[in-house]
Length: 207
Image (cartoon, rainbow, N blue to C red; front, top):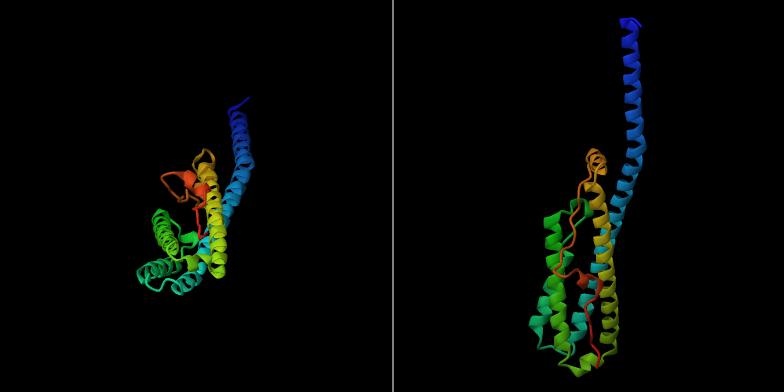
């Protein structure tokens, strides 16, 4: 074999190696890319559900306050706290595309403030038997309790979806595909005890 033939053989081997590497990258990269896209869409859907459920709760607040005012007019400070907290969460428009750790922390803090204000409203209702006995108020209680359950479920789903996405983004070789696709780890809810997420707060207006 002369030098020219040797070079040709080396070139052929290199071509085979390159084609093999490209083929392997294609075979492994396409499924990984598709998985990341699927998980990314899952995170978007999960976040949308979280926002929708929190909005459902915010929409109940005006009716709760108006009914309570009819029986407990002297509790103006509590009504003000609830209304202001509700206004704060309603003014927050956190799209999934703008979601980062800071935005999520602000969103969570505002929702927690509304939860606290609603808890104070519930506590006040215990001092007014007629308010507790109101059929309208009891119906709102059922809706609020159901919404709290939906919120807990939506938060739990979001946390699990983000965990799966972030795990894929950080693992090799999927992390290389994620970098190519412009995808990075997403922020997640943080609580001192994540068991709280799976247990909706107790909302009781019962007699």
